[in-house]
Length: 84
Image 1 (spheres, rainbow, N blue to C red):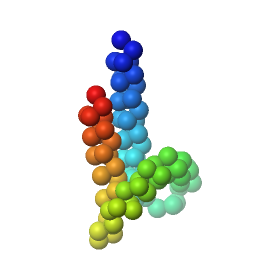
Image 2 (image 1 turned 60 degrees about the vertical axis):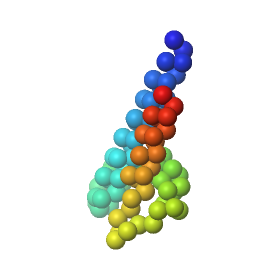
Image 3 (image 1 turned 90 degrees about the vertical axis):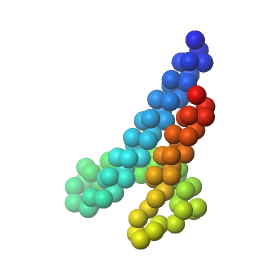
């Protein structure tokens, strides 16, 4: 019973973190006009950037497009599948 509960919690945390990464990436496309949007983006950036920087060291941007969020999400999904 307890291991199933722990696995559900870990999978939930991974799912939420993937959502945070996606929202952060979308918010980076918008200009700095709206102060509330900038604040939300800054908070999400503090949560996502340490993890994304791990992949930016390995995967360079190609044509101005950063593939690190895609790889980061794939790694999180792989970890979730391997653990449970």
